[in-house]
Image (cartoon, rainbow, N blue to C red; front, side, top):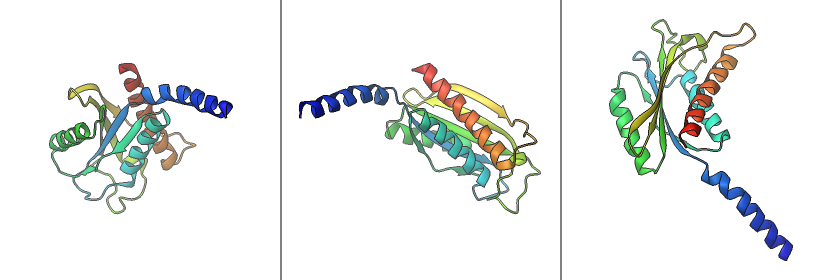
Length: 171
């Protein structure tokens, strides 16, 4: 019985630091493309990639309802920041995916890497409402050995690592 109790005490003290270092992060996706009302598969894949990296780094993550089309991105971000504060999140990441004007419109669910023009990242400390990281990310060149899905997954992971590294540097 004493050994079992010791085991649980040791596990508890080893696990507590991991929970204390976890940041809570809310992710808001915005799709800046007024021609398509539906959320593109490409946008969803970017969100999933960023959430996956943040979660794998030990952070508590949650996604907000995505903003699509011709809405006022500042107004959407302000509401998401308010919701993040009410949810006691430490950080909010706004990811704005801007598509090329020539992007395919007939199948928004299809993953098309070359349709993306750029992706803007904006990391906000919820408590103060101040931006702590802002970057316009130009889409990297797709390797000749990658298909669209592989290239998009790699790019989404790069975005996730960028956010995770900034969060780690602020703590």
